[in-house]
Image (cartoon, rainbow, N blue to C red; front, side, top):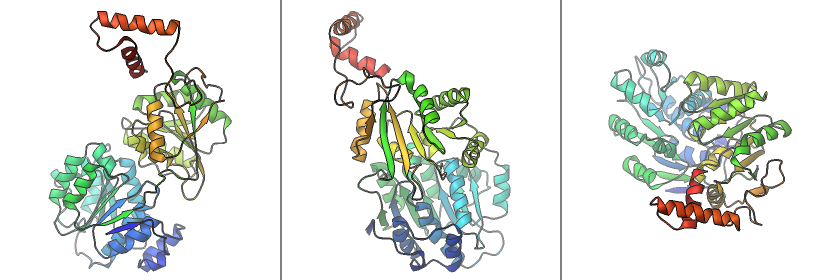
Length: 437
């Protein structure tokens, strides 16, 4: 069964119970998004579902609302509540965010939600589990750990959600997921949500989904029209100076800066702090306490700039992000879409600015092939190096140097041949230099 970008109906037409509609009204939700209007009726009927949706499409409500209603309408358990719904997600931040969404949507229902993830003491999580839980939001590693210790029992799970499945597989959770699937009852409702559908996800879906409905809301143009996107060509050594200049001159409410590495994020934060710009880093090497403090400071406004890596970014859902800076272009073009989706949320406009250095031309071309949107080049900023990417098309590869530069390349190639290096003199030298940059 397939559904594709149908016109949303009103929440009152989706068959949701009054307590859920009341909670949605409290949150200011008026009309359902396309994925909500397509998924909710299918899930209320009890069928499995394969959802393909980018971040920011409203998929959390699409699976949380029908799950809450089904648990609410089921006969209540006597004694300690067993885990009847399990939501698996890749990161701590996203787990916390989903747990909060479940609590917000189910505020008028007699249901109990808890979240468990690694990086913190398990004591409070174990205590909460002993009191009984209807809905458990978990990262795979901590869930398996507590199950092995006897603190989590999964014999009564009726609803399973794999959220951000592509990211979970990217992070190496596939074996943990399969171990968890083996612990669950066969008679259950299964949901899988993923922003992309590589072969590994398709195989996983085929293995455990039963005759699923397919809901896909990925648009033909995968980037949001409300985002003003541009690219600034800049030497790698000038990137931090350029970022500082933009933060000091643009009208920015709060912004997220994406780097490719954890150490790169730390260096950017140190550079900004030294120049009086409040910034905090969030990445996998940070403790859970540090990550929580960084997000709280960002939400409250005491931190203006959040510097993040891709893995840590999936749980960042903060209103009022006016700008996203791609300090380093991602080597996976799909990550660009997730990054810029942190702005222009809830109907607002946003700005996405990409920095492209001398070694990132291929990444830029891959992003533009995916999005089908050429990024507007800004060539007159203070740190633009006109010798960096010469020629009328800034996306073209730099032409080979002439004169003395060509002779130097030839001499470097000759030295490599004497050392036993392979390849032609000029071609081998160019490839090696590009990889170093």
